[in-house]
Picture (cartoon, rainbow, N blue to C red):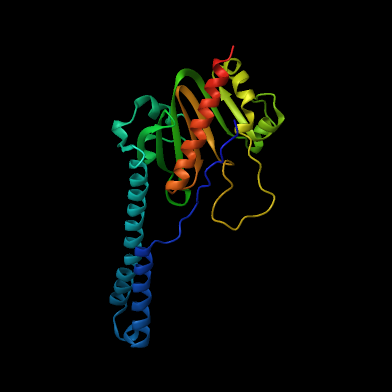
Amino acid sequence: MSIPPRAQLRLFFFPGPRAIVGFALFIVLVATLTNMGYGKKLPEPMLLLLIFVALSSTWIGSYFDRKSRSRQLIKAFEGHGFVTLNRAELDPDYLQTARSMKPSSLKDSTIKSAVVGSYNDHEIIISEHIVGHGRYKQYFMSCAVWTPHEWPMTIIRQRVLIDRVRSTQDLGIEAFDKKREILSDDLNQIAPTLSILADWFHVEKPKAMTFKMMPPPGLTEQWIFDGHWIIHADRGRANPKTLLQMAEFLTAFVDELEDQHSQP
């Protein structure tokens, strides 16, 4: 089976129409105060208050743009038979598996939205996550597939520099071991199957710099197998098209994984 393309997620989104209108109002106010000379006549506290109120219209516009984007994502998946669930309604085993991901734990509190449904005859959960706060805040998208086989806890993540000099678990495949670190409760059980599928985890870093506000897909991804759930997550934000690509990629991987596992 050919490997479907990974979804290319965005680190940033361009301002939406409401944010643009809000910023335009701010510019109009500043220009008016400057041209009419009000900036010199008004008391400084009043001037600062007016500027703050005008600038807040940009933030309010951005907030409603984000809400609108989330509704668009949900609506796109409702057309495929998915339903929106809150955190309390999600499978507890799925939540436990997501919490165990490394290096970024996708705890219950990180879930911004989640849809559940069937895709390519698999039960899947697709979630938006916000990890960290302030300048450390990062966006993740995750796709989880339920499998009939019960897998030992296994984490696959990007190999960092220190992992190249210390002893870690590996598959004995150079292309995989150079880029990925594997941590498993039972590597002897899962290694033969994953070794055959090593190409699914191998992502080459592009040599040329990209000027798009998107990281190369797959470089920061993290995987976890635990019990009946397999979760694939990557950093960035999605649109309806890229969410479907995530579902297509992971369900195809699980089909191949189950085929390999069922072979004697």
